Image: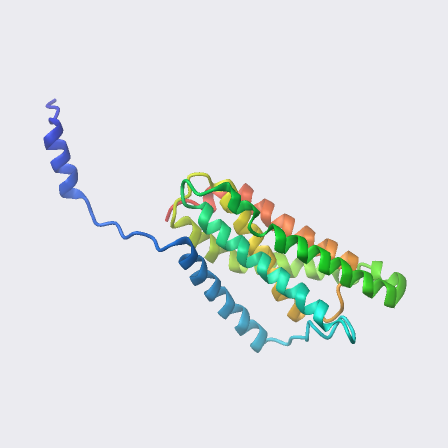
Length: 218
């Protein structure tokens, strides 16, 4: 068997090489993905029966409800942007902290709203009610929007998929929790909030456990 010399091998590889189209920046790819998700969410809100998420907290609490929803949405956006950055080799792990302030704000504002509802309505604030429906909605929405985010992230073929999957899962779940508020015909209680957070944890955990098949390069 004849072993080709180095020059011949390089020439053969160069002859078979194909142009590689570089990926856009992480911010551009995240913006494109979030834009598609935003259009899908807007279509759902316009086409399906919805409620006013700001009015459910009661008179005088619209500002609190609006700030809470902004924190939920910001958590999802920052988590998705962080995932696209972490998919690039060599990017700082500090991107894992990007959604943390918005997530803490989400918890604080939600807890304050739940406390206000508890004071106003009494022990009913601890009833499960439709909490399982909330859990199912976030899981189902995450299942629907997750493939798009996973496919877009997989284009970068991340070497370390754990942080990418964790941030992607958090972003998907938070965006689903934001969308839930337009189909949530009652004020959020402490039990509801616990189920919302449980759904976020479930989606994030599943994303991490399935990181290799869902982030495999296309």
